[in-house]
Length: 92
Image 1: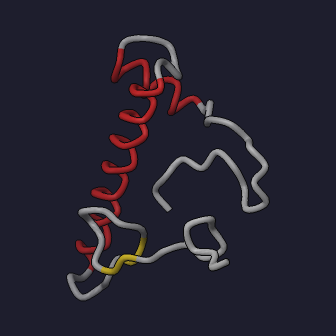
Image 2: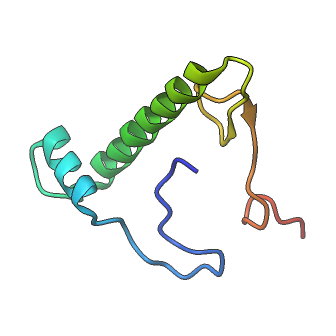
C-alpha cells in the first residue's frame, strides 16, 4: 500500500511517520521542519506515494509488461483494489 497510515485496524492512532526519510524529504520539499501545515503534509504524502508508485511500475514493467500491478487507485496501477474491513467497506 502506498500511503501513510496513521492508525491500525482497531482504530488505534499511532500518528505521523517521523522516520529520517520523511523528516529530511519534507525539509527538502518545503524548506521547513516536518510536519508543517496540514496542507503541506498532505502534499508531501501525495508526492512521495506517487513517486513510489512510479518507481514500482518502472521496476515491475521492466521485467515484463504482462505483469499486472494491483493496488489502490492511482495512475500507475493496472488493477484497482480496496482494503476490506475499513470504514468505507463495512456494510451496516
